[in-house]
Length: 114
Image (tube, rainbow, N blue to C red; front, side, top):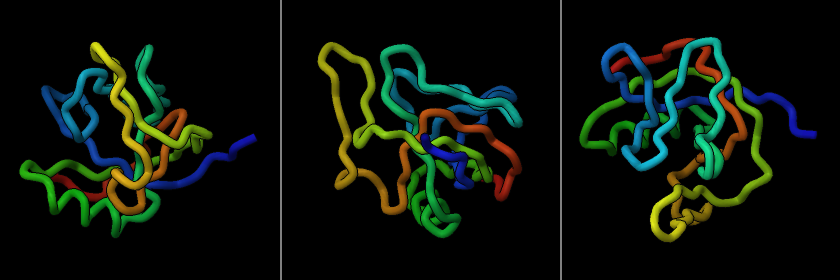
């Protein structure tokens, strides 16, 4: 059984709601102190194992995101995917450095704002 871990989640704030940093079909909504699970027919959620990796990825984005410390349950999946006409998967080699996959994520504390 996987245990809860501490990581870092990049989110975009839109009208007082938090969403995945990368805009895709199946963007999850995140809430502070509540667990978020992947949407129906979507793969695991993505978090960063270290704050340094989260900051590095945020600095590479054209639109900066908020960074939250989070608790997450590590997923046994090895790819990210989202539903479209054909399923598109992203394996570890194509994910940003330090990415961990999660079955659920809870935002706990804002570390930096955009």
